[in-house]
Amino acid sequence: MADLKKTGLTLEERAFETAKALLEKYQYPNDLTLEENANLDESYTILITLLYTEELIEEEQLAILSIIDEMKLLDGNR
Image (cartoon, rainbow, N blue to C red; front, side, top):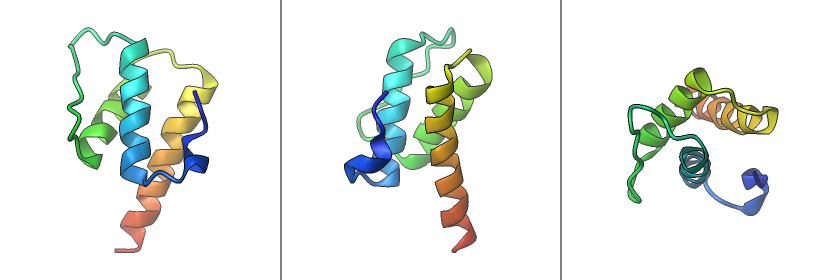
């Protein structure tokens, strides 16, 4: 999984790309789907679900945690 934080993508774009990549790799039994126009909350929900339901490798876990941390920072600045 590429380090999306260094690509200049926004948080929303990184969350979407990470969720999309993980959904392609892990076929969740409840058929989670991610639409191309998904917002940050939809991507976040999928990332959290995968974090708690799949045995992700460390790199995947860290990618999700990085997004969560950045979201917390944004929420703290509101």
